[in-house]
Length: 470
Image 1 (cartoon, rainbow, N blue to C red):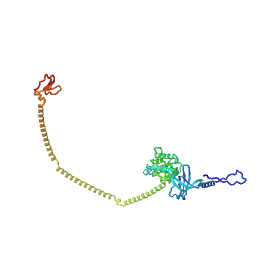
Image 2 (cartoon, helix red, strand yellow):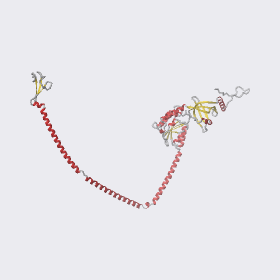
Image 3 (tube, rainbow, N blue to C red):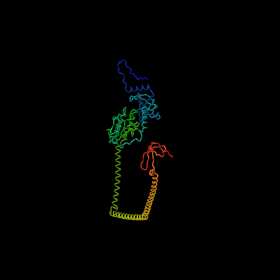
Image 4 (cartoon, rainbow, N blue to C red):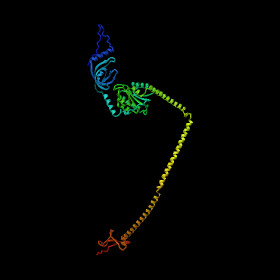
């Protein structure tokens, strides 16, 4: 497509030299010419891209940037056209198709698209990445409410992680100083946008969390903050390293990233999310003037209560001074002494009566024990035991004598039947060379060596000749 941006000059007057000065246009004339050329050449077109830096005005008009990998386009959706969205809410990262007229905003000399119709194409790549990471960290429990800690009621020292030159820090310090000037602020400066900023933010949070062991001043609360921006501008606060550093911090963390409509993973991981840096300051400290008014109110109420109490006690003291106790204290003391003496006497009588009752009960018990004394029964059983011991000893003695007599009889019988007794009567026993008893001459041969045992001693003999038996 070719745009005709040529401009005609005024007709040259006859006789004018060729070197006459060209026509000089004003900025307004040139801008209007460009607008006329664009609107005439392009008119109404369809454009697709990703929404970023979306802003909604109180008038209902919406301004945003439509971009792709190679370029970006300023867009405006007026309130009248926005009513045709039918509930569709434009947010950063949304992929859309827009129908609109290309024109030029003359006040800025900026070409733009006046949107008439919006069709959603789907979530942008960054938004999809944000949702995926958010879902994964939420599944790990990184955003659970049980992990959230209460902020200190009145922090004495606040650690701030932000850019030292950003508007967010100025807003935070301004509100904090106005509300409670005595709070100390320690700034750990970091980049809040661009590659590598997430690592700086995570490291700064960890340094505050590890204080004072790592040399940093100890703080009561950490504030991670920056101003608003597009999804890309705020992306460093959506990195996993930042979310984990905030969740792992031993010091409570407040996240105040972007504007009220902006949400980041840092917001979900923090112990508290503030919609803006200024709101974070309002949340952290109370209004000093309100505290002073509160202290004054409490002091006034205390004074009133104390005054009423003093008046009450003064009235009681005056009544006491008018009473009989104050007029005649000795009489009241004597009465109390008499009452005490009576109580002592009554107590002594009760003690004596209790003693008598216990002595009488003891005497009755002793009488019962004496009547059932087991001495006689024990003596009788002792006599029976002695008689049984004597009878048992006699029975054992008789049994032993009988067994001893039987043993002697058996011993005599054994002696009479033993081989020694037989030998003593003149008999002998003959053994062969192998030690076997020779009971018969059969089987003996001349020259066999034998051994003969007598009652006293033994001899070796040799067979001369055998003698046949009968």
